[in-house]
Image (cartoon, rainbow, N blue to C red; front, side, top):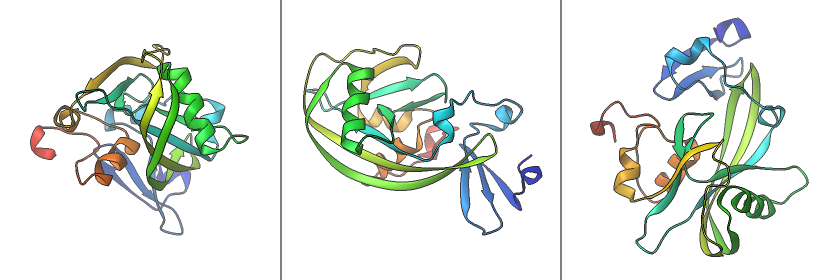
Length: 191
């Protein structure tokens, strides 16, 4: 399928497809499994634009981390969102956490960044991912967007490592604290 879009080589991965363009630059396609190759994710126009993406590590008093079961992408993720072109990354972080989780952030620290290239509807989309630890916030956490997130739970790192499928930005966070695992697990031994 991707060869018909001008890609020389493709390789099936657990979490998607890695494709090489003419320049041989690896790009990750947002296909979640081989079964979904015949389906397309319903991207919004914003999803098809280059952008900054944010993720927030929010912990409770037990040290558990807030995770969301994402409806559209069918994976578990830290609270995430897109930064609008008119915003700074920090403004986007504050807006997304208020819109999704009902909190006002007061203190935060950026801990990781990475550049990703995705293929969405045949278009290369560059995403600059930023992971923040939220050090202080006000408000009571609640899922304000249940149409986007089936569940919102605080989970221990051990439980997060066992989740069947997690987002790239969640993997980036895990890598930043020294934990390596695959995007999609077929069994716990894949961690």
